[in-house]
Length: 522
Image 1: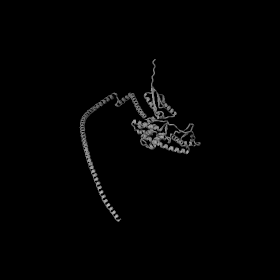
Image 2: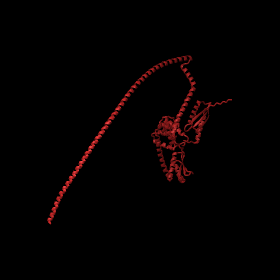
Image 3: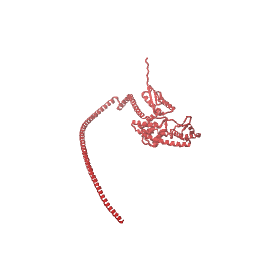
Image 4: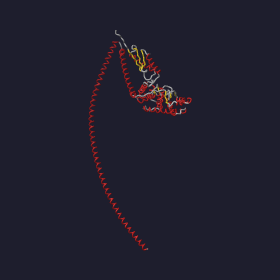
């Protein structure tokens, strides 16, 4: 048994040893195969690398050749261009030299001609001096003869002669003066009409007549009782707080807010509308809504003033002046909204100043501020002219602006083109048909006063105010008033109307002189 075990063990050992050597042999053989394969792959890769390298070298050589050809071509082209430019410059230089020589020759000829003319003038001047001396000697001789024969000195004869000439030429002088005066008037009228037509055609502003009442719509008539409140406490609170009259009558679904102050009326209208929407109408709520609306309106008028100044491009302006410009929206004069009138004057003045060669921006600025005092008349004593001038001086406005404030109501003379444009634009805006409304009584009074002024003048037969009081026709006695005197009469009537009558725009005085001669053939 033991022998068998030993024999089996020996066989196993021998088998293991034999297997080890066989395995080692196989491993060596496989390693050689892999090695040969790797060498073959490396050889192939080396050949491919050599091929790629050769191709790259050939490509680089080809690119280098192309670049060399391009460089040579550009070089030849640049040389050719440079040569052409050099030839052109040489030709121009030669042409300039020829022109220079020609001009120098021409200048020499002109210089010689001028020298010759100068010599001729000097000779003529000497000849004239000699002739003048001879003429003065002859005049002295003639004067001596005249003095001896007439028994008068030179000064006496001169005075007598001039007086005679003046007397004889008086009629001719008057005729010439009238002719030139008429020509100047016609030319002035043509120029003024052209400027006005340009201004009015390039700016057509809208206007709306301001009323004294606002209508507030209601959803139903039950709200009227709530607005009145218990024992009228709500309506009393509203009227006391807002300074307006609230009229509640039989008008269905509406109440009326009445006040001459547009600003207070606008705030009251907005307050009532918000109260009606809110539904809580009581004194405490009225005060809250009124304070809120007042604050909104103050902010609104400031913003509107800033926007208008920026839109008109009139330069930097003090914030307080811009606020007053916004407040003009809630001011009216003879039914014409003050802000609409102000904007119209600013635009028209700018166009007129441009036509007359003035400063457009300054004319617009003066037009924008010419009625600024109207924003203060409800809260301060005094007329709008003085108030406007005072506040503009306070904020260092231009003297042209202050001159326009005074001049557009005739309190100062017009000192500049811009001021004249503002005055003309103000009259044009105020005088447009429908722009303003007046009380019939004041209109009739003004027309009667104009007719009375004209009728009291000597030599006047009849006087009629026509065209809504903007023209007065004066018919004179032709035997008492001649043509020259009629001109003086028209000026006197116009001046007296300016001094005694208040009117917007201008009044045309038309003096008519007619001489009729009637004879009968029997």
